[in-house]
Length: 348
Length: 283
Ligand SMILES: Cc1ncc(C[n+]2csc(CCOP(=O)(O)OP(=O)(O)O)c2C)c(N)n1
Ligand SMILES: [Mg+2]
Figure 1 (tube, rainbow over the protein chains, first blue to last red):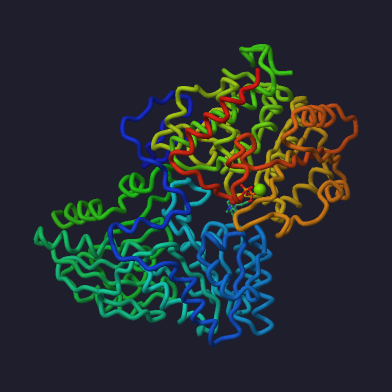
Figure 2: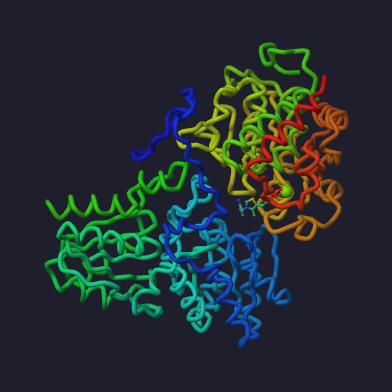
């Protein structure tokens, strides 16, 4: 077998002996919450929002493919045991069964990891749910690069996969506030939804702003004149921090948060970009192929808005395993890395 | 038996091998302060029998064409397989402190590109048996008499892909395929027998056309005899050995802990577990 090393990989040959490192950085377990980075956090925002919903709506049911504890659906399962279906580790039948429940008038929330919904269960979501426009809500933990376990658990292309599916609404919320509000909104949405989840102790960032999640809307969180960040998921947190740091260096950055990846808010994005004078920088916890960045680029091109454009995202590669902070640094998702990239682009 | 050069210490018993595998796993768990230690301790005996009784391989040449293939479908059991590969001399003991660290050859989830002796990239569960079917077909095509072993978990019995592979192996009469199921009655959210694998196990495989055995997966003698039966069977059928294992086997205070997919081990307990294991070292 030939060994294959993608350009951004730091992996050495498996036949090269290793020495013991001086400083030890442990791999983040997949059960760990996203590093809260010293912020306020809210516990299990998705599961708790679902409990709130279930109080007034008998149609809400939950399903998991052996990952309720790891998607925060377990808190709903504890509160409403008779409305929870443990489907075992069988993603395909979980999705098919969710479709069947929806046909019988229920609003199923089905959970697994993002890789397993998007890769293994794709055809089942596509034909059993999306083609019939059934109101199944597929909510998935470990989006993008949120585990150091390697490609089997890193959903670096889930948005690309899901964006390709007609009828499906695709969401990438930023934090606990966004997740809680989005959970309630999608329960009322008549069609199918794929939503990325952060689980465990989830940072509360948007609570500090005058923000309310609106389906299909991108919202300006922070305005600025040199750079227009268009971001989703936890990268909105990172670019908000980057905007603060860059302001000290005299670079004024706007942050437009676009948690709805599909249908993309073309109107707001086009209008903001068309104001001109700003470098447009998309930022996403996802491959640069097929996610928010390319969706924004195509939207701007279609609208005839020609502006300088850069993408922050993961390379189109299978990523390395390792500790999450190391990997975020290596692949350019840290606040520092964002600042450095932006400074070099602004200087060009 | 193993290839001539395979085992540098030929007089070491299987009990000693299993003990050493458990010890390596605890040392690695201590490095990360976490890990699938319950699984590694539970599977140590079946790995000892695999690597020190059944498999043919060359420690210094993990890609040797004549080797029996050993597929770890369950990527999260990597800690267990690394422990066996270290004992087998495929991986150096000196790298134990790198387990799960950046730049390590032993990442938390098993991947072919990282580790000599790790044949496939596992972790997305339900893949191993299907790949093993193809490899067994390929070996037959090449006239290579090697076996393909696939180690899977009871949780993987829930995946539809497993049963597609089960039927495929029968269709192609894969008598060179041996599937090992670590049946520890545990999966991520709870007991496997509360989920999809509640029924009788061996009869289910037999009904599909497999030769099935069900053994105490922590009984070395029972395992040896099951492996021998599977290897020497004349019927043109694939073979499965369902190994009933106990998570955390060999460290009583962990065995008694409430079972979970991630067994909690407090920082100071690693040394305690190692000390208990050392006391029980087989002679
Ligand atoms: C296709 C797939 N679905 C879900 C998971 C997440 N997951 C990792 S381990 C695990 C439990 C599987 O059962 P088993 O291997 O028997 O667990 P253990 O005995 O180690 O507790 C699950 C659901 C996965 N890795 N792959
Ligand atoms: Mg199990």
